[in-house]
Image (cartoon, rainbow, N blue to C red; front, side, top):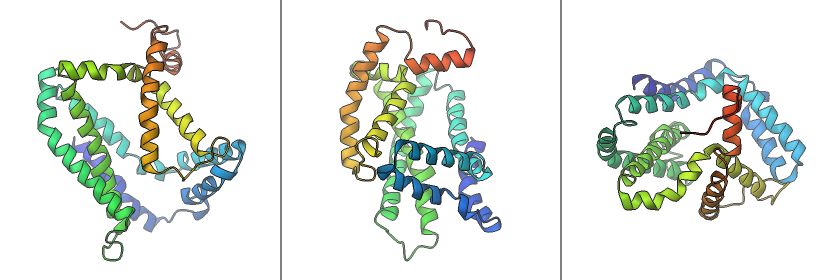
Length: 255
């Protein structure tokens, strides 16, 4: 748990320090590439956009700043390991007790963190009065807001699944979870089709409310499609490939 918290703190503290000591090469900054990608997203061709994204990936993955800045993802994994070692995965009693105890705190802290981030980032609250305004807004977003609120959702789902009626209602989403990678890639394709010029070209024009409606409309379709697929095959297509590439052999039917 201590190392997980350290992983959340390091990117926030080290970023400004290292930027001051070793200023990044402006020609290689993500901002410059992002500007080019934003331009190509609606007006560029598929090939041009793919080329820019590959340049962005190379710029990120070849820089130590990228790994230092995203070490908080390791923190999330370690936090999951900590929760598992408390017995929350295998012991129902421990899982429910932990979820009940933490749910109010997680939802409250996560929600307030996200509200503060939106107020500062979107509406400029305190921009002229608060020193390090962008840094503080970023802290409210991550790690105070988004991951904590996500953990609150997980705790809430764990409690709902302990109730027979709710478990029956939520069962429709189980096939989506069994095909999580396939569904993740599919939603990415839908988002790209809606946003980029080779599709509908609505990049930067879809408001959050419209995006939420798209998700609400898409989720039942994914549930039905996943259920249909799993009634005929043991794995989703990309889950099958992932297992094949991981173990070097054809996946066997799950027990």
